[in-house]
Image 1 (tube, rainbow, N blue to C red):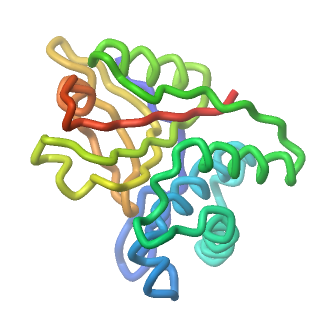
Image 2 (tube, rainbow, N blue to C red):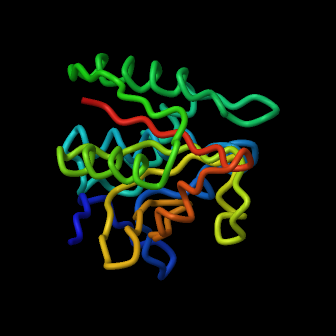
Length: 190
């Protein structure tokens, strides 16, 4: 079974983007450390039903989110602060949401359950990977991404997410593999 929430598709410079890309920021620091802002903007568009948002309007939203989630020298690894700021923005635009957290994933099954529950209820998920031992996730560490779906197969469940404007699929057995080296945090909003 496959379930994938809709997300903005942008066409820019003869390329298709699945959600936003921090490389669009005009500021160099934002391009390097603005992933939390992009994740928040991806999620906000979903909750605001603005999946047809223009590139320029989305860039403006990314900039607003950057002001809420301004990274420090170590980026923005602040899980609870991200949720607090997102809730604050949603309240500002007239939507009441409550964060639902999974700070520690004890098993792939627990991770899949969290993802499936949120996606089946129609909620995207903010995912922060601080560290991970899997080579396939080497470029996704110390990074915020937006989970938009899952696909179940006989052998595994693939988790679908947006990262730097790309649609990425990674097996849950890899993503949520229990190891002290794998720090994956999830937050969704009801």
